[in-house]
Image 1: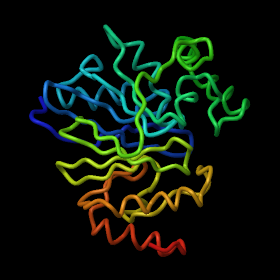
Image 2: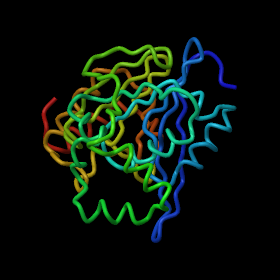
Image 3: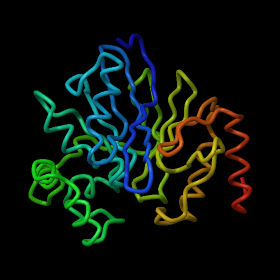
Length: 252
């Protein structure tokens, strides 16, 4: 089993009709056997998540908290199925205030119109569909139990600093893991073919704001970047982030 404190990238694989989708939640662990999962994956990725935890000699019941970087379905969509198979109390669930209503289900997801939502539901079997609706519904209890904000220091993994990086969504957050000098970006940046890039334009609600958010990363001494889409980047990340900002025509 994992010991001491630290951070590990997980890789959840899902076979879609025209592609293989891989997303990268993160597992944090620290003193007193506290295990924190950062993002949960898509609906249908529960078995992949359980396999990743099993490889670390953990189960869903070992998770003490879930930290959401933001509201998008590929980050929160596996939550209902995770909760349904977990025994005992729900874990603490943390997110930024601006994305809380969408994660709670009290407001519809910003990037999901009714047609897309219905299409998603039709891909789930009856059991999973009922679980999904019971969790992400205005009539359900709130999912988010704790709010985080820019600059918060949390003890997870030996210590992380929350970085509010709006643009991709209003409440998007990233964080810096101090012990390993790792920046976990959520969807604020992506890795494509081994290279680090800024946010993807198509799924980003406010591209100008998202690009300006990258300035906050320059305040940290970074050895490794973990993007939810693309995984690791370790080739002079601080220098590359400054290049991305300059390529966008932004001043430091």
